[in-house]
Image: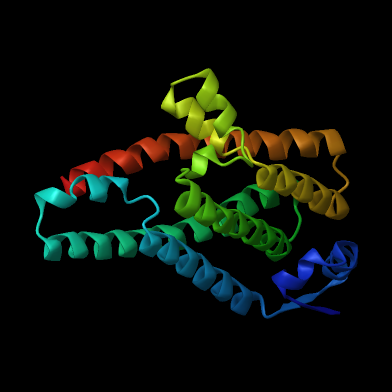
Length: 224
């Protein structure tokens, strides 16, 4: 039995997809699906950079450089964001999959399919950041769909605001989806699955919050 990989159809009739994947001996269009997601990730992040999301550092430096130098900086910023998108997509698709595979023993490719759905959900979340930034001037960590905006009223610690900004309705859905998916393929107790998935997300949120600081530092060093 083979399974036709189409991550965008996965959001409809999930239980049917679970059943087909569980009994599938072969997964068709596996690499094509991965390539499509890499392409979408690069395209979305490139579009966000083109619109000016995250270019506050460049704007602050605009009067200190010539128009040509400013356009060159915008170009390299967009290239950097597109490269970052490719790395991020690869990380999301393959690193958690390897960890879940090591713990559960579920075939690796079947876990990667789960992470494909996760990446799609995350890209949809990124798309919601665009109108918030363009029309309301809100950074991603101040999205009304996350806890970041609440954290900003409680503390001025940027790390905590970044951390809670990553806890959004999309992330809650992703956690629930991963637990449901893994539970369908393994006999592990549901409580342990919840603990494992949430723990891994908290670890990644913590590391990502640190990387946000590093990102700001590197941009400052590069463009100043």
